[in-house]
Length: 163
Image 1: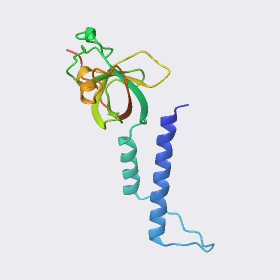
Image 2: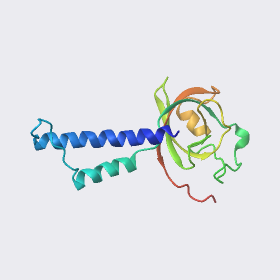
Image 3: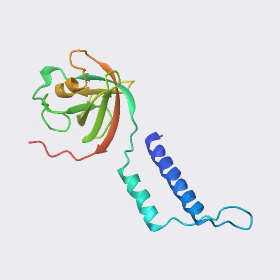
Image 4: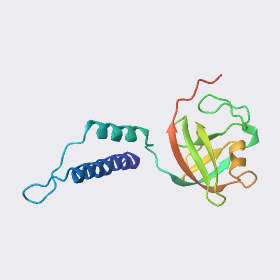
């Protein structure tokens, strides 16, 4: 079952219901039975709901562990075809689509970094992200091995072709 998909649909249904209730309440029309009359959503309201749905991420934030690439990987090709550069803000994740921009937050220090997924890491029984050296330094991970983080997927972008 695809939980993020159902959560997105649920958000849409709740948003539509709230907008519909607000439109009905403002119209003030009541049927003979005392129930509020439901009206159709205006074209503007429907387009606003569609726009919000398109902008939302289909992924949810998750608690995870983060580590960073070993220095021996510098210059090697990642799954996306790019070469690993420890000075760029990139990361490896087992399942997020290539090109997804994620915000990684260290909840202990409130430091955060935005990274682009451009590689895969081994599948684990828990959520895990492998950060570049620059990203690890920004959230206070450098020199610690691994820490607990929160991953917030922001948006999917197409990665440019590797050089």
